Image (cartoon, rainbow, N blue to C red; front, side, top):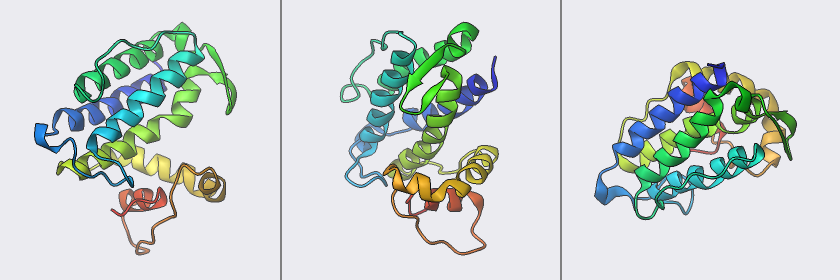
Length: 183
């Protein structure tokens, strides 16, 4: 199994733990992303990830329940399809062509999806009163990787303004603040 497939598995399992931990009456609680509720965090990943990743290698989108009816089932369907693609060596290495350029599927997922899984696990945990602790090794790696690209990432529109934090803030706080969140 490739490193990207292993990382996907760990991060997706961590996100799924948060999804499965949402009490039924908390799906409409406000999330840290402006205008979103907890259900929208799941919807975001279920909508864009399969469309981009599976579409880029001509695989069908998974047939799962809607996020409105069953957020956990919708996440499991999306995760299962992406996980299967990444765990198949031929599919994982299949070239993709996107706005980001040409690269193997596993590189596209590593570049665009792994950090989204990490940060949105925190969003869902924050929205629903769950443990907000993120994988420290992943946090450290992403923080080191994105800080040099601050101006480019900020101009992409995918991140809100950086939130100021104390100089001695831990890495998770700094990563979340980088993405515009108020940890």
